[in-house]
Image (cartoon, rainbow, N blue to C red; front, side):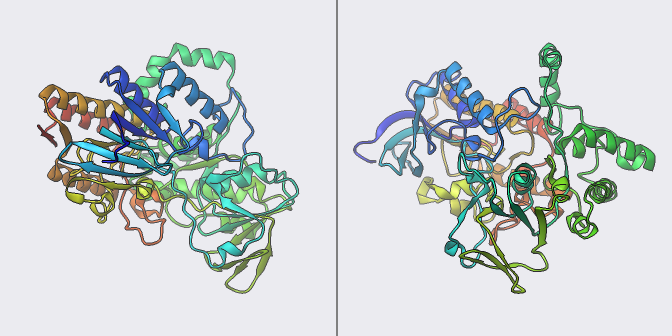
Length: 514
């Protein structure tokens, strides 16, 4: 233990929704007095502090922008009186469990030291940017950055831009900035199925209706598969005629929203190959209708299953009808190297740019944990415990790591993040409360129960199309990482039932130590 370590009851890492929820519960439910929270950014916001995509703030719309979400998070922190708990511009670099003292010894990069009974992390699922190891990447003399680190206030007017990647970030950036730039070249490794966002103003009448039905909406959220606030379809796509399927797809396409299109249309797009192909064919047809150049339209049409990431954005396909937007297929002609003035493809073709945006995704879910030296009982490193595939019991607790709890950890539910955080935070608080009632010093996942949960998570994944589509959800988007589902894909309702069953059975899947 560091001599200058501050003694606290609990230490929380993260300044987003998860961190705030944990702090609220530590204070209001568990009545812990000495609580501290560490955030490496200079303000609250979590993902939305770091991810500053080039979107202007715009209140009263279906989709809030980063600044709006940050403001909401800050407002929430003030209302629940947890802003005082935060220490900013510090990054937790190590957390070692001292079994003799039953304390977590925690250090930050700025030299702060803490000794905590409980160590809780809310690191987020997409917080560790991933950039492939392109040859010559340091040689570029222009401005380059990962899409999740978009420089605040960057003016792209009149610039020549390269966007490498066509996932959520790449497609959103392309759809947003193409009217401003001189030229934008999109480098596509794999075509994506993307439906419209259909962002629009929300009228006062619509807001009033939402508030009148507030409890009912939340009931729909917590009793649905993916907690998106709409009623998911209970009908198979294969039960419908071709005409009916087309009508449903057209209607939901115009509503907007990737999860809506995937789960509100029919109930088996994620589990039945034929049903999935019917939806995929519809989206490919839409791309062919929208994009005027036949060659570009063909390149933009995905060939595999629709799934993995139900994406949505605004104006992406339409952007390719503009003269200053072009598409380069790097699946057949990969990027050979980054050059001082741009990049070069394998066939020798060269491009010059002012800015390169690496929209190349994230080392998701467990990726952020690799930035912290977390050591549990008997010197076991978390990275070693997760070598065969990162997993935590219910996504919240890891065997051999007493009093260590994760929100949105590996093995948690694939669903709307905020309802998931609500459930996981509450369950973590229940575990701590139960240990206290029993007079126990620590609680952690039982090793056998954790292994059984991991098998369940992987077995469910194997029964879905998600298992057959390369993405961060399956951990196979990062070179050298083992393919391994990061999520329990059976839905939030099933997950919620499992947590309730665990509580009813007095937490038999956990080990309590006096």
